[in-house]
View 1 (tube, rainbow, N blue to C red):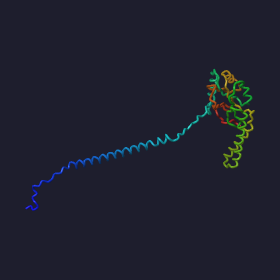
View 2 (cartoon, rainbow, N blue to C red; view 1 turned 90 degrees about the horizontal axis):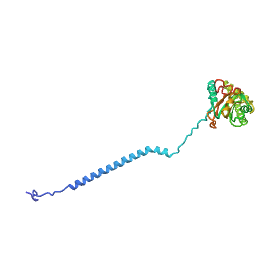
View 3 (tube, one colour; view 1 turned 180 degrees about the horizontal axis):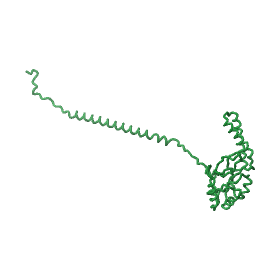
View 4 (cartoon, helix red, strand yellow; view 1 turned 180 degrees about the vertical axis):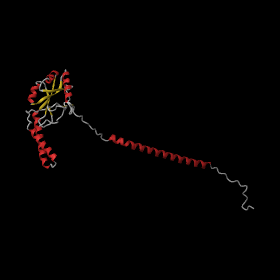
Length: 259
């Protein structure tokens, strides 16, 4: 019945697949390890790139040139600012002069315009720091050097300004502007006639002296006010203000000495 032999009693060979399972498990573990390693490297590179981009501007700022901006402070000023009510100011400064006991710098405002020679006679041996001048038709100025040299330079400047305005007038069509420019020419013409160093253009003088000398100046009829500073050595660049005879109610009004 079984021409090819009876195989019912044959024993089939038995194969052990433990090694296959172990090999497959090893491959899977290796794949997982590779994936984790790649993921870790990717995260690390991403974080490093982000941190580098955040710090790049800082490095650029640190490595680039640094520009230093220096703001120059305005020069110190002494004297009544424009708009100051003069009655209380004069009263308070006279009291300050009476209380001085040491050497000071002071602005001596005169009762009327004077010549440089008259001012030197008035202050006597008290050292002069600078002169306060205002020729007719001009704004006040402080002269610390030679008065004749200042007059020469100011004359040239006013002459040039007047000549430029004269050239401009024929081109102006607005009546108001034409009137203004004509008034400016007239003002400058008058001022140029009074720019001699010997003219009565001095309205104040800055001096340095002991308390007794300053108080003696304050008592003279030719002197309107001796305005004492807090020290005998203010900074060299200090801008001094005095009182012109035409400044009656408020300091700085009018802005120019009348022509």
